[in-house]
Image (cartoon, rainbow, N blue to C red; front, side, top):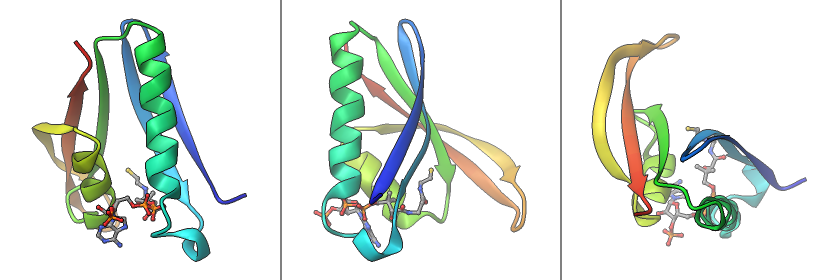
Length: 95
Ligand SMILES: CC(C)(COP(=O)(O)OP(=O)(O)OC[C@H]1O[C@@H](n2cnc3c(N)ncnc32)[C@H](O)[C@@H]1OP(=O)(O)O)[C@@H](O)C(=O)NCCC(=O)NCCS
C-alpha cells in the first residue's frame, strides 16, 4: 500500500480526516492523486465544501492542500498536543 485517505461525507459537506503516503513513496504525486479522488467524489455528490484541519508546521500537507485550491479559514489555538500547536482550518468551496 502506497497511501490512504479517509474522509467523512455529511451532505452537503465533506471533511478530510487523514491523508498519509508511505515515506518511501512521497513526492511522486500519490498525495495529489488521493486528493483528486476525494475532490471527484465530492463533486459527484453535489457537495458545497470540503473542510480539513492540519498542524501549522506541516509544510508538506499545507502545500498539497493549497495547490488543490483549499483556502485558510481560521485556526484552533493550541489544538494539538505533543507538541502543542495550532490547527489551521482550510476549506475548499465547490460551489
Ligand atoms: C502530506 C503528504 C500526504 C503528501 O503526499 P505526497 O505523495 O508526498 O505528495 P505529492 O507528491 O502528491 O505532492 C503534491 C504537493 O504537495 C506538496 N508537498 C509534498 N511533499 C512536500 C514536502 N516534503 N515539502 C513541501 N511540499 C511538499 C508540494 O506542493 C507537492 O507539489 P509538487 O510536487 O508540485 O512540489 C505526505 O507528505 C504525508 O503522508 N505526510 C505525513 C502524513 C501527514 O502529515 N498527513 C497530513 C495530515 S493532516
